Image (cartoon, rainbow, N blue to C red; front, side, top):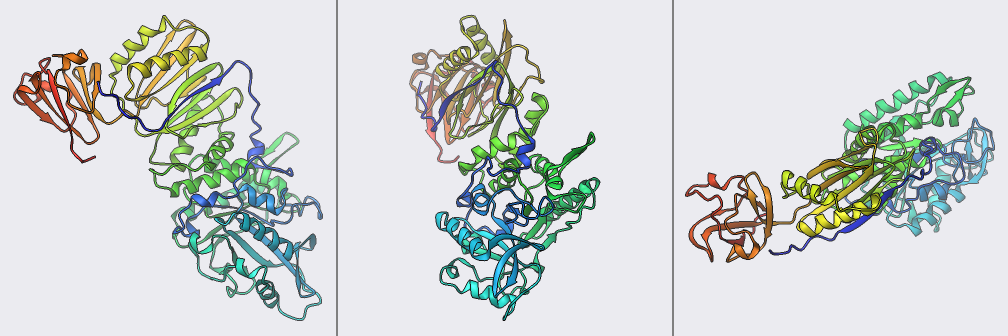
Length: 569
């Protein structure tokens, strides 16, 4: 039997033990009011094609970006991270409010001076771009509060900043919606002061910025406006830049409550950020545009970034950022194992479509040995659950379900140890017996059931209980070649060929053939006698019953095979 050359792959042991994992604090995943954040994507745009329009991207942004300290109290603070921390976390759209004073710009939120000046904003942003030249930063520049002690217009002072040698190379001067390649390493200005003379005109955007939330009970109404704009973004022109403000406030509903929600006297008011992360992780949006947020959490930022993975070809390798994206968005998925499985499926099928995904939601105690092909994602333990996902090249298996069941059942009595030991032993035996495809084995101590574990039975799978353990086996990514099966319908003993065999007796398969599977650019000529003699037939495709081929009967009479490449995949 010819041994195939499998793709680059990894065999991985993963464990979910009786010891409880860290509890999930899901609220911190959509809302963050601390000086740090559990996500980091300083160069996520590197994996986006330079030909991609800025309008096609989904950009996490912050409303009143520089209001990250409480100079004006809860009514005016909208962020918890300084500018560089926001950019490092993945934020790519910022909202800069400038007061024109003394022919310079100070940064305000309404009447409140934020103790930062425009030079600070430009210097920090440029330092970030110098360190991460694949990125671009979209910067809304808005005239804020009253002018004082000025001798020129707001636009003239902006132009003075733009012409400074330290800033000039980094400020893009176009007014159209550019491709990413046009603006990598530079700042794209959204001109909210000069009518479009200094950047993309603010009036040319498709905008939702209804910021008044008169009372906490109106938060739902604000979310409905955000969601409606997401729907417009989804169906809108691919060349139009859509901007969606999740922020809102009033004296009765502070920004942090609108964003993160609050419980007052036993009444829960759900925040806009909470609604938004569920909407995005649930797969209800494929293009988010620019989302300007207050106090965004790690999961919300990453849920927006995940939509940009959709812009990659399904054949492309997933970016390294996706590991952290998966972990952070997994915190938003709850319920029993079945609900979590559907949640993972919805998220990944939307964020990275066109791939053969394997999903699992597993509650302690379990263990798994899994073949994967370079991309493997596992969440932290959350309420004793772990979420696992990995794509495979295909979900094709060439081992018949009855034969697989018989093989697995024959191994169970000799397995020993705990879940991890049993998973390793069974995986090793499957891989040794059927080396032409990949295997995943999960072993769980009882109880099972969809409330405790759920997995994608893609490829060909088998599940069985024995004693205190439940075993789930999946086969997938069968290698290209010609497969000979002992019984019809691709059942029974199986051997894989990538070259001709003069006598099948050398493989213990003489006069046993009943069906054929052909994968990849191969065809087979099957002959009744050794060394390609006697009656023969040729097939470039799979045959579930060789007696259906003209010139038979052929069942259990094949003794030699010629394997040739067709050059067609």
